[in-house]
Length: 447
Image (cartoon, rainbow, N blue to C red; front, side, top):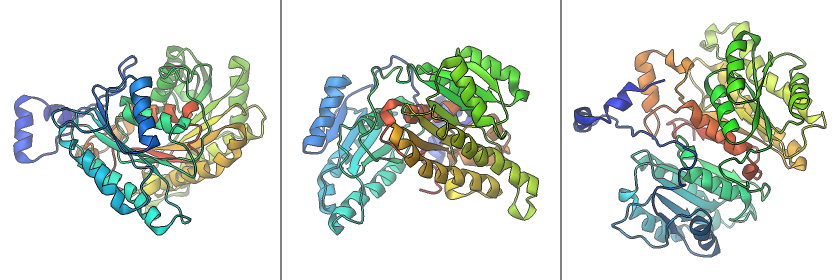
């Protein structure tokens, strides 16, 4: 779906008029292209100690990035990485943060700012907890100040997780890359050192078999495309009524199609049987299928409430139970569910939808420990305003307002959600457990 306003304010005379009038000027986002370099310019790594040295070495030696440890004012940096893992008092934030601040005005369009920090806990000394939690507020605020399509995100290491743990490295690469174009103002916690780095970052899902529900169109179709691009064999699942389009998607990604109502009692068994019979295994399940039936709660009918809960959360619970008790979903399995910012912050007229998506967040949090024994994970992706057929039906004025209510001042694309799903499904995300990654351009609601 096109954003005419975004195109207008980035062209010729219209752009000058928009600037003079003080209108929002969202920048076109750079999205992932296979074979493109990780960064389009040098990176500044700020911080002291072994973690900062390790990050600098990773960027320069492994990922072929030009790395600077001290700012050069005349340079335009493509990324700034703030390594704050050693701070133990709020006073210690000053030097590294202000050093990074000196280059923000010259950050390249589509630049990246990433923080690495440690999780604040109740067991920490008050000063340590204050410093660590301070990074949260710092990063979220900084992300709202960036312009030109630049983003700010953070990686939070729990417990004794090392800075070179697979999921820290994987998250760092994801946040620095154009795969995270619409992820902004988010802090992702790495809970453990689990996971493995892929042999190739271009095809990290090689040899894995993935099921995607609701795959016939929209976000689900983009997820199927992206997982296949990353090497996975895809089983595309959707309603029989979407059979023709579902077949086209499956053929395009060289996978197989399964026509199925996910609310059926035997949906989980049928998914597993299809994957095993056609592909010999099942490694990844992406719960994307979902519906909306919006009404104010005062006007909500039982069928509108029940149908949304049945598709959006009850079906996922039933399918997961079948997989977890089968004995055939045990090779570092991944469950990635689609939640929503509505399930975090609520949305007028969507009590049923918000309840279902809040339920998804609770479900992955409780399901994740059940998979850890097999090296598996369960996580959720929470999209904000994404340009789809559904959002295209929103009244024009409301749609324009919704697009601008995030730090990037535009709607996301289905591929933005798909990229986040692909990351969480990858071997490198094995230490990200029971988390929610928002893909919302730092929506001005919730956290």
